[in-house]
Amino acid sequence: QVQVVESGGGWVQPGGSLRLSCVASGSVFSRTAMEWYRQAPGKERELVAHIRSGGSTYYVDSVKGRFAISRDYAKNTVYLQMNSLKPEDTAVYYCHAAGYGSWGQGIAVTVSS
Image 1 (cartoon, one colour):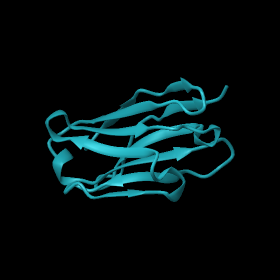
Image 2 (cartoon, helix red, strand yellow):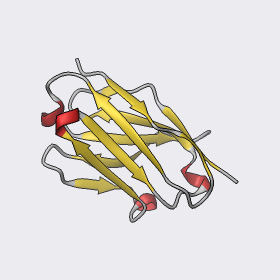
Image 3 (cartoon, helix red, strand yellow):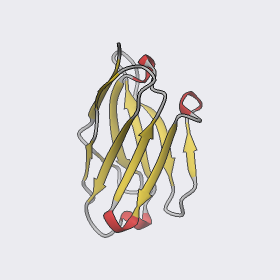
């Protein structure tokens, strides 16, 4: 069983930046892909970014060039650096350990002026 815990959300003005962190428990972190999803009010949950154990990444088109996913194996942590934030990025963001189906509790990100 892998547990994941997110942190780092909050409120930011349009054009601002936030960094989300997700710490994964257990010794399997290095062997599983990690993902960030988000769910905006009234919308379905969508995959935002994905990073494989080898480091290759994927981004949904709407965040390409603005968001960056990375992982620190020593800290069992995956990050989502979010720059040039837009109001449409407002959502609850979830960390997901892909190989284990483990979800975090979600963390709110609000982008507004």
